[in-house]
Image 1 (cartoon, rainbow, N blue to C red):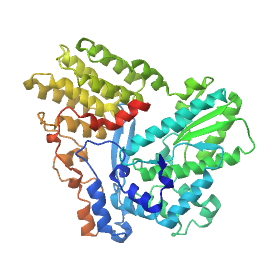
Image 2: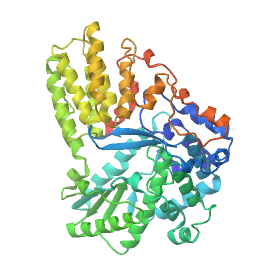
Image 3: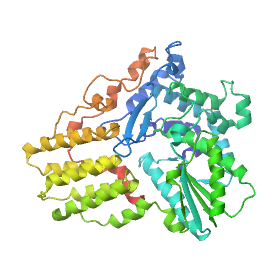
Image 4: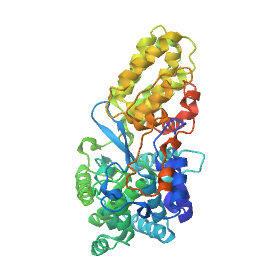
Length: 501
């Protein structure tokens, strides 16, 4: 595996311009941003978006909704994760800026400098070889360089303290990008220099977010690189504070820290330093996810993964036992909601139940259980939608629309469920189902042929660029042409989780 930062500037630019890197969440196969990105790049012809915007007070920074926010519920209630589709014109400008040869070399050299301290960074984004999705490569990298490395360190240490950053992307102070790239003193001295690369990146990010200095967008590989830059700067600050201290090891994967020591006292001292350094860039540790273990092998493995191993052999192929196995899955989902492990188990259940040929007698009960699993673990819905599609296919033809409407009604009661509704539309509009799926989620409305916008384009005065941003192009095929039961290829990323979660 090759880190993106180790590519040359031209290769990095080509990689980051891919639709898979622009937004790295999973969508049904009929949705793609590839055409929009290519047309925007052609319309801009290498010029920055600022050459195409109106004058104040109608610039990008003066308007709300320039980026599109797709909400993904975390618990089926009031907690959610906002994924942002950064405005394509601003995204392409940022990619071009950062991947200019001199700028890319500056970034490479600075990261090499920052990565020489006591914190072992295991999470810099890896480049896909083209045969796998970007996120699938990152999952394998996490397993090899973070989880397996943690197990290896159990030979040398007796105590493990694990913690993470609360709302990492949403709390990152954008001015710290320049500090990370150029050094605090140099960046402060040149904070008015509009030609300083760190200031330019900060400027463009803030322009896409109504001028906010707190937070960067979450959802693109480019922003993952920016976050890694700032976190590497924090690693550098930690290394300076811990200079001279011995007999410890710190691993960091994105915003997760694992601190290995021989005693609790040293671990507590180190985590205080980590917390103090994070505060300098606007971040703080999440107390709820901080834990200490004296069994490193057990502590290094996520508890949901250990628990999931016990369910890995559940046999869902026998019709009489399907309800019992779904209830086991439901219990696990409530205990470990929205985890990689529940995605793995849901996908495993989908693969097994897709081979069942006999209609179960308790079909409505099984559908109800799967729906409730989706309520408590919405991120597993792509796999769960396949289970629902298979189960409902057993119902008499005249009853299927009624069952799907009940499922749709229950799912649409979940707040902040835009990502879930995108997948719900996939199974309810599929061949042979053909329900009219009414949703307030703009992506679903675009699939339905409605004239809505994802990004606020009112700051753009160039007609060619506006035409390039025609969102109807994101629909590259018809959901009505798809089988109601998803093919295994549609859930490829879940398969990667199945191997490593």
